[in-house]
Amino acid sequence: MEKIVSEIIEWQEDVFSAATAQAVQDKLEEEAYELWSALYNMEGIGATADEIADVFIVACRWCKMNGMDIESVIRAKMEINRGRKFGPELPNGDRLRVK
Image 1 (cartoon, rainbow, N blue to C red):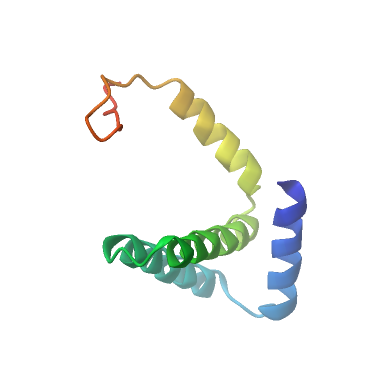
Image 2: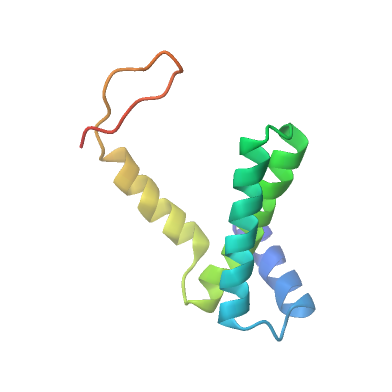
């Protein structure tokens, strides 16, 4: 993961070197909305995958600009998730968090 994150950051810093923190935050919000829209409108796997990638790409830059390493952020969140308790499996395969 470190390699792709480094490639993403390098590309962004080359292409969008003047982007402010606010511009990156705005772009992250825009890409998150586009992902939601692709899911809501059932635009298909390809369109949804593109939007997931866009969110991740911009999130990498946002983390970097805010002094965070995205891999560390993900690992920390996964540690929280692992400690959570979930109820029984629902008919759709999901489980609701109980703790």
